[in-house]
Image (cartoon, rainbow, N blue to C red; front, side, top):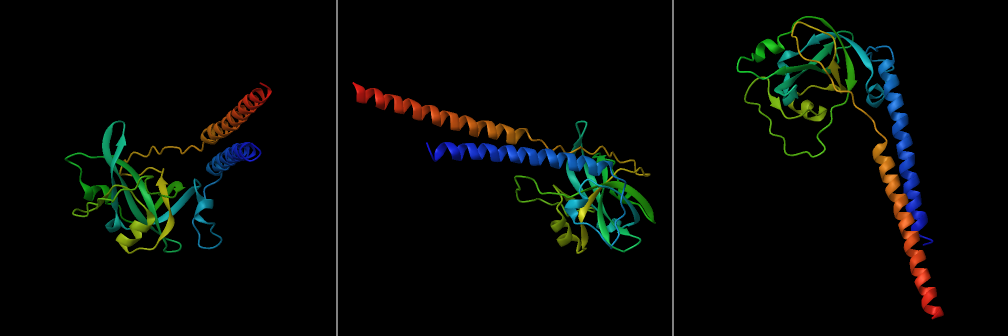
Amino acid sequence: MVIVTPLLCSLGFWQLERAEQKRNQATALEMRRKMPPISLTVSARPEADQLLYRQVNLHGEFLTEKTIFIANRKHLGKTGFHVVTPLQLSASGELVLVNRGWTAETPSTDSGLLINSRGQLKISGEITIPQAPAIELTPIDDDSQFPPRWPYLTLERYRQWSGLEVLPILVLQTSKDDQDFIRQWPTPKVSDLMHIGYAIQWFAFAIIALLVWLRLSYQKVASETT
């Protein structure tokens, strides 16, 4: 009891600390969304994690020949794909990937028209960092057509495929253009409920251990007095 109960209680308090960290993280991320848009300049650029969910204004030209499609994406029950194209920034020449939005998959879909965008453009969006799925199977990429179709995007996979050194972020485009893509991006939510649930479990285990010890102690005393 001297070891088990304090250990279980400490695990419960640790989960409460994690819940507090998640609440602080959610507050910080919401504040970032409300901050003024930034421009990606070479000087004094924060780390990618510090740019997460910040609004950004970009000026540059798309390298359409390096476009990829992220396939099997749903919108209102329809199947389609996201169009991801690198943008070469006018000021620095650096490359940043832009998710230009969702479009439906139809027999008449013309891939060439979807990615056809030339000249200098001004784009607004929100910064994110693409992640692989939680359960990552061997990816089946369809590179037999242009643009290639991938099940998901990671920066490392894109660098290997394209041979381009892109910035460690992905911009979800929010500004309108003549392509008429759907740009209803989900809002990530940081919840503390999971950690609170774990804390309750650990405290419950501590109470159960205490009750079991009291029960066994009572039985031992009762047997010694009979």
